[in-house]
Image (cartoon, rainbow, N blue to C red; front, side, top):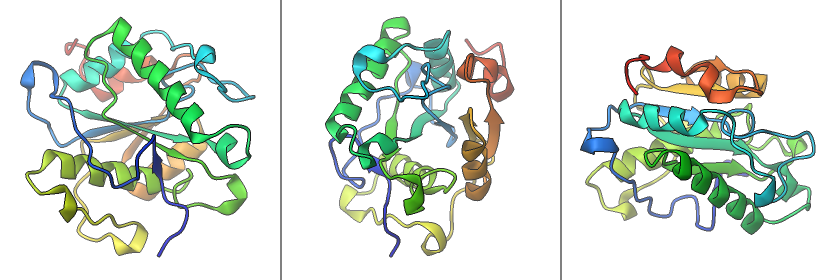
Length: 216
């Protein structure tokens, strides 16, 4: 069994996930927008984002997230967060940072809901399957969202990773957006289209490469 699996804020990785309806109750297309965090949704820092007070959204990030959801996509944030593994701060601090990101997104656009946030708390030399450039967080996000969208009991979820996961669904309509080569490598390993964005513009720089400009 693989070690160092992805994590969720405040709950186990396989805890039940409740999805908010998509805007105007449109049906889910089956596509997922896998988004890195820093440099995609918010301004990053070489010294990490260490507290909720340090969170600043990138321009138009909320509108872009909302447009993705209005196009029928689900949103999965997949972020490397080694400060936890380095002992700089704990997972609750990260959860508070994510709370602030979601709060700021919703202030700008009520449809800018993040369906699931996954993180890797591990340091690079652990070569964790959850840490990009490995695809573990993307694998987990797909299985969690698929199961939450299904009519199956949550107890029936049996998460699989790497070679243990066979008969995977198509990712032909999904996309991974990141500002680093490690994001692109994780996308390639997972088998999903990838878009590299400039860290000073983030998601807004590539949104029209994902969906039509007509979908507001």
